[in-house]
Length: 305
Length: 305
Image 1: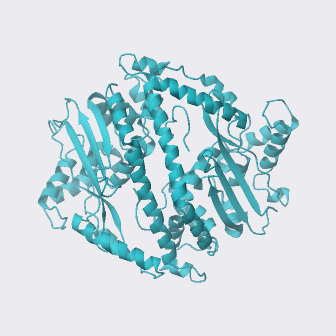
Image 2: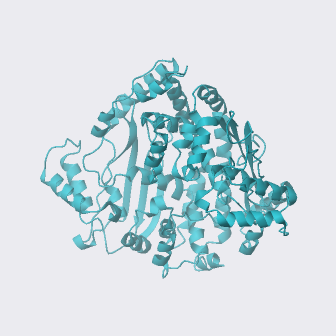
Image 3: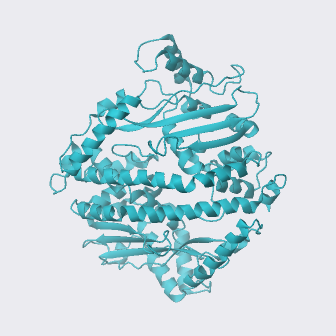
């Protein structure tokens, strides 16, 4: 354990650092709960107002910072611009559950690509049974593509969904579906993957039952750390087993957090920036390239601290 | 005004979007205050604990995410590693003033480069007189370099400080100092500038008096927006006049915010990541290169939402 070795010549124990981290985490969760309470009504007010502006959410996505924009292909943009009518992010386990769990809801008008009027994607924050690890868990969402040619994920989302139905627990048994999925993944460069593949993200393997057991284990670990007991590191090799074998969107959790913590609260600022740049539907793609140099869209009026 | 034009076919007024932004901003400020209250004691506890770990803060800086790490040159790293003994960030205008104002304090042991034992840098959040603009204001901090060869800023910080003493209001009169500063800036590529040049950042030109007047103007604007009155955009040309002519560290405010909101709260996680990577003083520079691919250091245990 390199860390304990590094602390060996000091009076500091690893558990003391972890204990402080535990306390910071509790404060973070309390802050999310407080923010949710303070801003709930304002988000509802905003939703009503921006529903009256055509293309509001498509333009917000178009002006998104790089860590979101990089996942939106030109064909995704075109679809969002013609069909995305509403978007929302909800911390759906509040007020009593985990404030980190997220629900994304997208509404679409009639379009060439798929039948769905609504796409919903949930991210549950769940712990491992040993209470030493945690992360987002999600389920593949099916999109009813109008034809194979109109499928922006090139069949990948269908295969992820099929694999999940056939083997929900991810037991790594061989199957035709898995073979086909792996083949498709191997021939698809990560950088060219459609934003809609994100709906196939699965994340960690922790079940609701794991989380309930893990919550108690975590509480025990915290008590031990508070008491100054050193706890051995978790075995890094176990981490691999916590993840699904075929993850079509490996950074799906990061993208979820970026949308929830940046795009969602900053939507009006991203929209007004788009408008001040003089963007219109016509120079849409051109502006997309202008923004591709890694710069974030500056806020309309002020830089917030 | 492109924005009003974009809203022309909708029942939405620009002032309604701005009104919602105003309310979000108030919530953000309330959240910073609340977080400060909840975490103050924990930060004090952490400071005592990590003071017992040699090189704690230098290793944290070494593992910093790209938006901080890109400003730290190898010679800065070497100095931090041998001499940085403590670091802190304080929201120094709380509890009654602006929660965005920041004080950075760095403590150093005896070293080859400068005489200072402490370097303090303040960022005041201040408004323009018209209440329509705001940003960070700072004053150049002088470093007592032991010799010209040991000056990591190549004389730039001295010139910024001299210019500030000669012309504190930034009246853009010609002077020998300004000429020398401009020449030095022109021959120094931005990417090679020392982290210590950050102590020369000046930011916006707003005075404490401007801010007091601006606070009232801002309040008036908010009332007008609440009442549904549309307010003309500020003149973009005025923005240039709000900034100093010779800014040696143009992104100094972004760096301040990144240190305050990311490095400072996440210090233990960045430190433990450094240790788990098996870093030692010897492979320090090597690891620095490994991290230069734009990836952030992963947190020790969990990804926080």
